[in-house]
Image 1 (tube, rainbow, N blue to C red):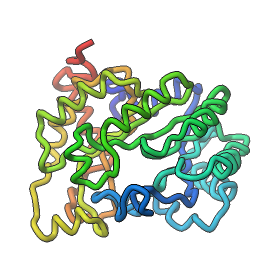
Image 2 (cartoon, one colour):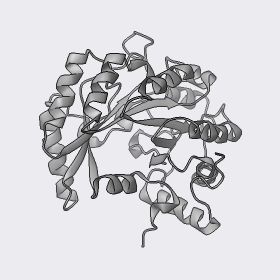
Image 3 (cartoon, helix red, strand yellow):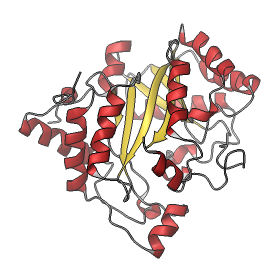
Image 4 (spheres, rainbow, N blue to C red):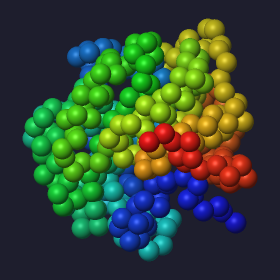
Length: 310
C-alpha cells in the first residue's frame, strides 16, 4: 500500500485540492534556445545540462510539430495511461521558454491554451529571461488560467553559479521574484543538491533561505552526471564523490524538515535514462525511492517544516 503524501506538501495533492480532480502535465517543445548557449551571456550552456537527459522521451522529436499537434498527441497519450483525466497543464520545458519576442510567445502559449481541456501553463525559464512586458502578458492570462513560471536557480551560491557556467548570479533570481511578486503568476524554482564543492551545511542553509522567499513550488534533485555535458567530461577526467541513495535520502529528510511547509514539492529526485548516466544510482528518481523516503520520514515522526523557523 502506498503511503499518503501528507508527510510532505505534494504537488499532486495540491493540484487535486485546487482543481477538484486529477490534473496531468503534457510536455511540449516550443523550439526555444537559451542565452547561455547562443552567445548572449555565454556558450555551451550549464555544465550539467543535456536537455535530452531530463525531457520525456516522447517530447524529444516534437520540434517539427505545431504546439497544437503536440498538445493533442500528449493528451491522447495521457488518456491512454490514466482513466478519467480531463484537465491538463501544458509544460513548456526545453531550454528557456520566455526567451523570444513577445509576439512569438503569445502565439505559442495561446495555441496551447486553445485546447478546451488545458487549464494552464507551466513555463520553464531563467531569471534573466523575464522582461516586464512578458510578465505583464502572463499575469493577464493568470487572472483566468493556472500559470506557473519555473525559474531555474540550481544553487543560491554565486561561486557555484559561476563554476557551472550558469550565466547569471543569484541576485538575478531575487530580482525576478521581485518582478513577479505583485502578479498572480505562481513561481516554482529548481535546486540541485550535491555539487562536490558545496557542503551539507550549505544545502541546509539553502532550505532556510528558500523558506523565506515568495515561491510556491520547489523542484529538488540530486546531482547526477550525464553524457554530453561539460561536467560529464570533468567527471571522466577526474572522478569526484557523489551521494549514495542513503546519503541523499538523509539529506532530504533534514532539508525537508527545515523547509517552509507552505512550499509545494514538485520533485525530490532527478532521473535520466540509464544509458545517458555516467554516475548511475539504480533507484534514484523512481517511485520506489520516493516511497522509501516517505516511509523513513513517517518512521521517524518527521514531516516537512517540523523544524521550520517562522
